[in-house]
Image (cartoon, rainbow, N blue to C red; front, side, top):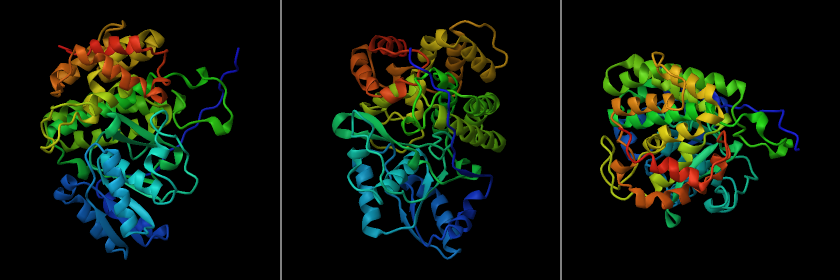
Length: 422
């Protein structure tokens, strides 16, 4: 019998939270000796004016700021290559500031990596899609400023993207990708439309739920220090962040979606996103996120409400949420107490302690915030199950974090059971 792990790790970026925090970044960067800054955003966020205000505040501190607003919503290998090329042509830079959703922050992570390290993007993508190479040189320091409440990318070591030629969503995972500073300013997400709030909020919720129900860190085989990865499984510190995130979501999520003028709910949602990121950025996520990659990567013609018109997308948080009820029904027997505890945190009035209690809480919430009624509503059918399973199985790094072994047959059951929820 193999000895089991006795050590868990915990890491997080420096954090600045509160209204007006985004206008203080110049102060922080000058303290690091930074002079030239690349600000990374997307056209939609740029149109809202937030990046310009952040850039102006940095310029007033004497910094030289160049803005890249070509980030692709749901980044691809092609869009990241374009961003890296821009940074190479306009650089060198001393630091990168990402102002936007997870797409902008992940694009900035790729720039920080490839501006200082040899090779191409595919060299660093997680195996088996890429080579899984670790950075050999220090990355440019990154300040992450989320304008959506959900991705948690400001706290994590992950850069997520679609590889277009393979029709698969994957990522780069390494501790060096974690931002040096996360600046969470609730004023920047105050104008987020309801559909975006709903999808991004499901990402918060699943970050908290998946990390809370993840495989316990001490159930893994013992590792040498150099073998330990950022996602080490559920642990006592990550649990605290996840529980607090779920408690905040219980009171704020529906209010933030259904009443855009409820500033208190928006601020609580931003805090929940931060807490969930601090939890899952160490414990990890599992089945709903593994399923989300092919769901988002193989979309045909679905265009969600409240997102920019154009190419079809299933937003990441929506893709994660669509199989969550069935996924947590499947994992229930591995940790019944945790699943029931999570259900009560999300809905203190709920009764019952069986495998359906958490899926029922999630289904009611999804209906209340206007999420699609399952995979069928975003264009998938039972004939797509094998294809989606194939894509999810490529996310072994995530599936290994599940609280019980997961086979292709298990995933097929979860995905088939997610075609319609109510």
